[in-house]
Amino acid sequence: MTLACPECGAPAPRGAVAGRAYACPGCGNPVLPTEREARAPAAAAAPPPVESGRRRRTVGLALAAFFVLGAAYVGVYELLTAESKRELAELERIHGADVVTAPPPGARPAADDPAALRAWNATRDRYEVRTRHETLTSRTGWFFRGMLAAFAAQTLLTAWLAVKALRAPSPRR
Image (cartoon, rainbow, N blue to C red):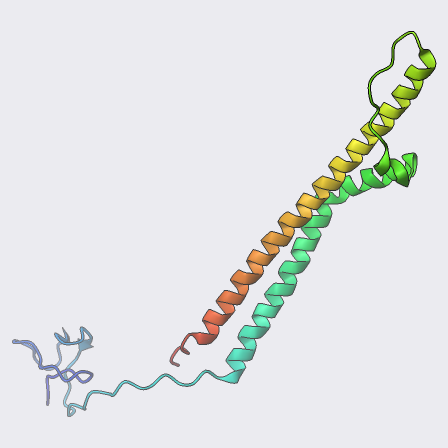
């Protein structure tokens, strides 16, 4: 009978007896001495090589995350810009596609010339439609750039995690 630790071979502490467990002073594992002979400490096994199946699974998960996140970003972009796009289409339908080139109204004419004042009001109204069109176009552009930047950051994070997972040693089984 031996009282030494079967894992690391450290001698048992003073007062250890067969049949009573103790904590190994060398490795900290619980030891229950038995009537068997002590075995030599096990050599640390080299980690097994990364299997190609694990590599394919990691790359597949990264690709699935890329496509799912891409679809989510496209959906969120469409939801956030739907009202602006509807209003843009309505402006172009009512005022024509050349509303984007409406000139600024210039200085307001004198109040004693009603024909010039009516023309100026029409020009001003058309110019206000143009500025509304530019505002809506700018808003959808900012949403697009913001969503594209967020998607790029998410893609980089996903790629970094996939590379990190591929380089990590396989867990022992």
